[in-house]
Image (cartoon, rainbow, N blue to C red; front, side, top):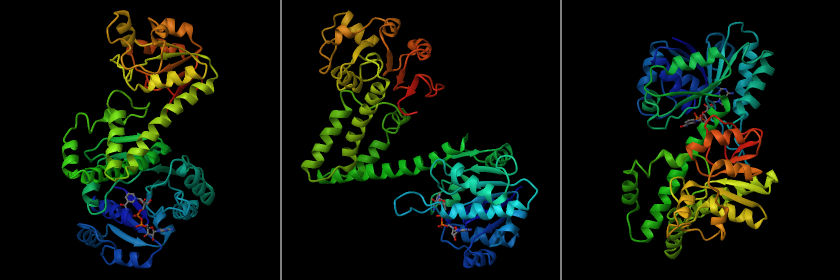
Length: 439
Ligand SMILES: NC(=O)c1ccc[n+]([C@@H]2O[C@H](COP(=O)([O-])OP(=O)(O)OC[C@H]3O[C@@H](n4cnc5c(N)ncnc54)[C@H](O)[C@@H]3O)[C@@H](O)[C@H]2O)c1
């Protein structure tokens, strides 16, 4: 069992402190608010939360949880600290790190006179780079010690939801953390090992980003459901029924497939159907804020790819894929065809390798090049194989993933600029000539 101090007896801190104590750890809660300290020491919960009154009464009575404002006492009598203070919005919308920084300084001062190893784990929600850019420098400056060597540092975001916080603590949907040092990593791994949830061990910045991604994703889902509800209501329909039916489709609607950062959507359905729903909303007097933003953001992703190619300065570009997705020769509203057309207009010479579109032209299918209304000389630009494409090109744009091209393209990226919109190999990093569109 561990000895843990929890800084900040707010929502996150008090639930964590009580649950840790209930699991048998010795917990010291630290706050600047004397009322909260007294309440905890009296065995009372400072917040309203299902089951927390009983839990706190039990663990305080058992001597497993105490509260104090004495930082030195808390640091000297524990092996790890959780920082759970608030990170409100600053007036400009940025995250305010004032409390986190203050606590790190206080902990740092206390660490100066402590010889035993101590891990400082930030649990407050802070933007990527904050642990490295604010917390670690504050801790080091105040302690005169080196993070990762003299004391440990981790970032371990909290995902509990108010009203079901204790339940979420014992049955989390997500566990992720990053740490600078092995003792902190071991401590956090051991702490979570009994839970039925995969543990994601990542770097500090990725852990920070996952927390914001999770909260923002939930916000987007709520807003999407509301917008569908607004549009449905204006058409005399029940949006809740519509969304319930949508959510029953775990194969396509609630699919991971569409949750992978990459290139713009296109094809015969999504663009036209988003436009039509936007139009229906406008006709019925509903402002479809999110749908408008979806169209705008999709267009911006095509522009982003164009900017990357133009930045390379290369005037002879080979496209791997031109149809709207691999496995089909359908070019209707293909964002790749749109991108190629824009580059051609800017004077870039484009050759294209796309086995499905090529096959349709070679077989002289009646619908070969179907849906293409942006590249007039598409047939002449098609090449038969990937080697010919690479031989003809000063840069490569990987638009569709074709398994048989990956090894050749990886080799090509050693000598040619390669802009990858698909992430053909998960292990490849954007560096040197190889650049991924959003990784
Ligand atoms: N509330 C949630 O459901 C939730 C869930 C996950 C993550 N978070 C994140 O966790 C963090 C804490 O959120 P919260 O809602 O628990 O905050 P809160 O505002 O309820 O509590 C913060 C506590 O920190 C104390 N504090 C401030 N300065 C201090 C200092 N120098 N030393 C000791 N204590 C100090 C305050 O007195 C207060 O009791 C935030 O970053 C938040 O975004 C919140």
